Structure formats: structure tokens, C-alpha cells
Length: 321
Image (cartoon, rainbow, N blue to C red; front, side, top):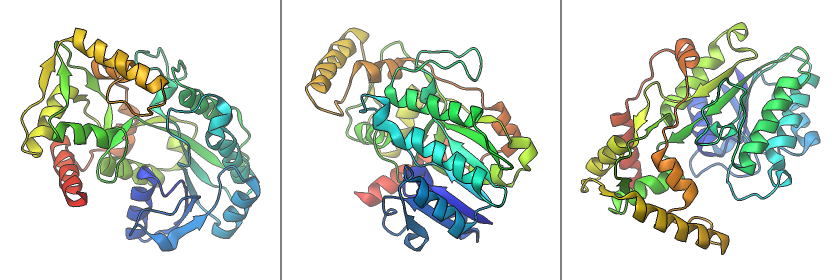
């Protein structure tokens, strides 16, 4: 199949491009950034997702049957929606390019779990409540898709949760590194459950969904996450064991709040990634799970367990160090 991946140089995108190429598809990675070293450099087409003319030209050149729209700004440091034009203007450009293309296209649009605040339990799938400007930008992009004119093309919104595994960066690589160094701790009395996704499972889900008939996925919003929720305490202990480190200690909430307050101050002073902030502490103690039943029914069993994914990730970290 002819496949266009916007943002194919990013973490999820580069893994997806690599797997699609191995499977024999004609793949184009449309991204401003070069792909990671050794990751299908010959498939890279340099382009800005906010440039509608260049993107339309890419559609004409590639003539895609499937588009995975993964291009986005994903950090949380932006102050206003104008800092996230890749997410809003970029999404509108993809909608327009698909609508105006001569042949029908099915597009998978990547959104984010942060359309919901960490402590928000949505009553339904469009019960938006964000706590970050990045999350607001993803809500806007979903609204553009839901309300937009797509012509004869079809679409699916994919909401990745927290995706981890070989090739990842901040913040989940940091989590593994902190456990490896013996600095990670669990909050005493807290054992939150998390909907996380191992990267090779996520790529498997995306490719499987690509082969599902349009009628089964068109107009749907699907969670991209593993079938089984993770217990953060248990997972941190698995990671420590894989690194041959001691199990993380427990720290009383009182001391965690003090450390988080210090991190908040450091962040306001300009340090972008303090070890602990109130936002991260809230994430550490709050159960965040999503109903991925519909995705599971469409995709079926996933190829990698948490234990296997953890081992492969630790092996990758050791090889890169």
C-alpha cells in the first residue's frame, strides 16, 4: 500500500515507518526533522505540516491510500494555542489535503490522552477537560476533524496514552533512567493503575487497524494502549529487577509534596524538567485508565507482554549507554 506518515521521524512515527517498510509497503515520512540514525532515511520527505502548499504537493507525489497523521508539537511548555500550530493548523491542512485529493484516503489522526486532565474521569469520549495548553490544542484538532468536511475520504482518531519502549525520550525514558539509578520512589500508600502502551504493541495496533475495512473504523475515536493496565508500583519493581537494582523505596506523601513544591519553583524559574513537580506527583498517585475494549476487539491479542517489553527496553537502554 502507498502510505504517508506525517511526523514519521518521531518516536511512534519512526517505529511505524520502519515496520511498514519491512512489510513491503511504499512509505513516505513527511517531517521537518531527519529520521533517527539508521531509520529509513531514504523514505524521508522534508516538509512542514503547517505549510499547506508543500503538504498538498506531497499528497500529489505520494498518492497515498493511507495517511497516519502523527506530526505534532507534544511538549507541555507552550503558553498559548499559537505555540501549537502544528497541532491545529497542521491538522486542518491534513483534512484539506485529504478532501482535495483525487482519490479517497483513510487518515488516522493521532490525538492525545491529555484531552482529559489526569484527575478527570470522563463521562463519555467527548467529555473534554484539559489542564495543559497542549491538551487544549489536541481538543481543537479533534473538533476540527469531527466538524470538518472530508469529502470522499474517511478517518479515525487515535488517542495514544503513554507510549514507552526502545527509542523513547522524555518523560518515560527518564522514568526508566531514574529507576536504574536508584532514585525512583513510590508514594507510600499509593498504587495507581495506568493505561500505558508498549511501542511495538502500538505499532501492531496501528498496522492492524490499517487493514480493517473503513466501515469498521471510520468516524471512531480509539484508544492506543495495551490491553492490561499497569500498576505503577509493580512496574517500577519489574524495571528495577531488569536492571539488577534494588526495588524502589516508599516515601511518605508529606515529603513528596515538599519536593514537588520545590520543583514547581524551579520550573517557574526556567528549569524545564525538574525531577518532581506537583503535576508529576499528581500523575504518580492518580489512577488513569481508559476503556480500550473497542480497539481490542478490532485488533485482537497483542504480541508483547509487559515483562517482555520491559526487558527489551532495558536491553535497548544498555546498548545505547
